[in-house]
Length: 457
Image (tube, rainbow, N blue to C red; front, side, top):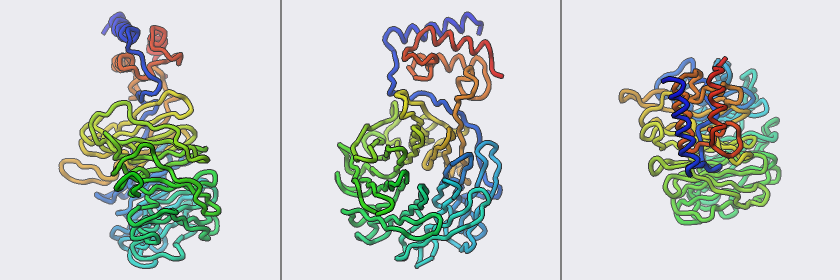
């Protein structure tokens, strides 16, 4: 393709835009992130479920493999460098036993790693336990168990660190009826149990504690099978971490039976995000004020590729950025899965993340996390040639410092980037607005051509 043909194609794109195909600042665009690494464990074997849990903090990625370990399904967790992909440590508890499923949940923050072993027979069969490790040395420092643990509580799924505490879910606990659920809060320095959280209106089969997040003295808890809008519509709750006082119950308006609101939850800097992956055509997320409990906004993906995308099956929130998993999305292939990334600070949302090796029924994105410009996402098991294989973890890094000519984010620049930029213009994606003036026009094309001519270093 000659240079003049490049300019003609781009001018055609901007002409269509100016004839009425402008973009909305609320649309999901192509992501300003690129896939930097794909992580695998050094001792991986099929169906060890590497990537069943994942967390990122301060350049470190922690990954759980609950069916791995040195004994049958005893479990393991791994620490990786988010920049190089180097495996820094392999975590194994000092009392590992068969069937513990250590690594079903993980979290890392402020120099600590929490790893749940929800099937450990600590106070009865599958009562559960949680282990704390130093994030730099990988040394085990504490083991946590509730003072009233019982068989089949599944204490340790999920876990959340923050503000000097560890919040641990036990969604099969029976205090408010069978499988009503509870959450325990511990001092992360001493291991002392501080409070036990229960929903004021908790009932059997609510699964209170199926999702947890901690920030600024608030513990946010999801109860995805609570029946406020009908069977399994779901709800979420906010608690004071120090006193255990329930300060708000979060209910989407309107909701619907079977929505599973509360399947995922995140809280950061005064904002709570709650996923409802079964709502409507393919799922929604809701943002609330963490102080008042008032709903701020609800969001869907830019467009549904198919029904039942499960948008909101996972969420994470950090420093004004939000990531949302949609494991059933067909943007790659049928049920291959996708992760959406958005800015809550700017009105323009940022886009979609797809794995470079996405395949049919990968269900990419069931577990995600974001911290400091790094996004991690998983597919714990993937199918190849009819066989199940151990999972993979994908690390995405912000494109803020990347070459502007590399539009398709493959770390090269060529005519494919021109075609990609043309598509961004035609389909009104926000990141075609290179000069950030809220319009797609010739000035954006001029800036792109200048960057393309200069090339990438």
